[in-house]
Length: 332
Image 1 (cartoon, rainbow, N blue to C red):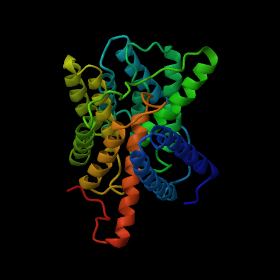
Image 2: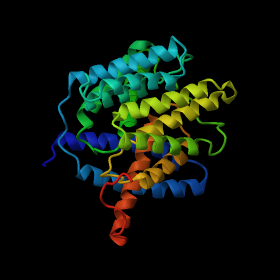
Image 3: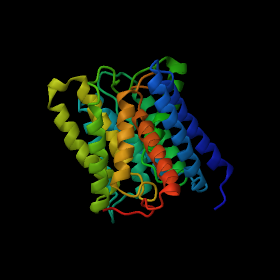
């Protein structure tokens, strides 16, 4: 299918956004070993982007229902977290469970709108200590829904981390505008990872991806419900463990990023072994996440997307020299 100019523009915006986050957060780090490692990983991710764009389709037409779903999801998550004091990831998970149930067969919502709502829940992940005016949060959620409506079924399809990237892009647009208008945009939206015990997030991120992936492909639940149900259990458990402090919030967000990664299609990563590798890359990146973008909504989705793209490109490269590697989708 012939791609149109908008397809390439949107793919370029997605690539630039992910690259900026990645370069400023990792390749400018003082550790030379880290710079070498993430440079190699970045090259693989760029190769994955090239392959993914080749399989893209013309950009879809935006739908009001997608924008409305993301907006409602954003505001519901935001107000539960800020005004009711619900642990932010637990608030997002409650919204996702509701959306997932509505998107079941014969439900009131289709899959595209449900995933737009997932992007909106990412945007709404703001703790009660943050005083961002609600209307900027609402604008960010609406932008996320609009972007997903264009990109979701069309641009680099089949990678779950794109949902977080939409949240990051929409937040960047809305909060930069807020900063220019009334100085309200320069805030951290998620807990930074500084001070987190080394590698603590790795088993969390990997377990999240595998649990969510198993639910998604072994049950009849909608993907968004498969994300929301385990995330609600984990986030509630973390919230009930006050000894974890700020580390608990980071672990909860690490879980949500791994769950987003689990939405990768079988055509991209055909079995649980490849999902495990992508989740391992994502969790390893989150451990070392630094720089000006740590703490911003959707950043964990960017890391998940980079992990997916890199492992996708690695699989395609290995298949050229090892044709016995699985090339067809299979769940078992």
